[in-house]
Image 1: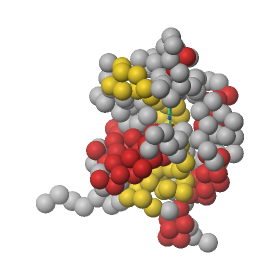
Image 2 (image 1 turned 60 degrees about the vertical axis):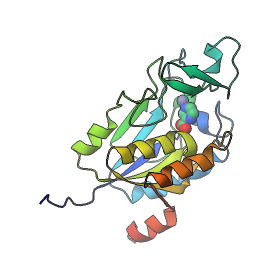
Image 3 (image 1 turned 180 degrees about the horizontal axis):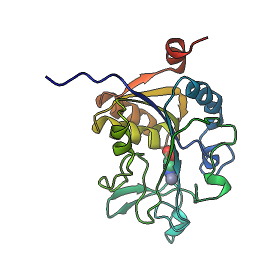
Image 4 (image 1 turned 90 degrees about the horizontal axis):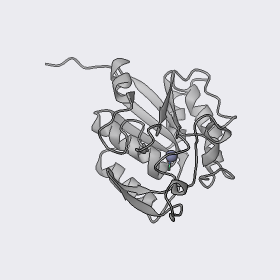
Length: 216
Ligand code: VGL
Ligand code: ZN
């Protein structure tokens, strides 16, 4: 019989970057409200991983790189349907920087995704071609992680895709709903929660985790 492995928790903080904040290039409504929630959650986890959306300026997901296309339209690319976004999270710009009030000094790893010019990556695990790994799955297996807790932006894109891929990779997955905010484009938020529920992703609230994990 296989040996029982102890539960190893990792908090995965997705894309808490300036361009996703109110006033940013791809603003998520009330995205700023999650920063203090995440700071508090992070203190209850010894293992935290951050992600950054990290695009070259020539990135295929930017409407501006397709003649006659506008942001929030969709376009068929070799790997499937792609939403065309405003230019956002360009590598090493103010917009791609983490929110300056995000305070997670003990974060162990920052995963940058969406760096391939021709392929987007909402998921922190697999790029949008659905075959190219970012390496995060291997990292989490290597460090013995068994359970992943997700927070960040946006619920219905990068958080949901990461949650689904984490499940597919065999992790137990919880999305902390009040530590996330959504873009909600054409019903994408409802769809994301349906998909996550169907995949066995649990929907939890930060107060429940903090009650259990915070010591005085
Ligand atoms: C995201 C759209 C485009 C996200 C990133 O972080 O959810 N959404 N790039
Ligand atoms: Zn992006």
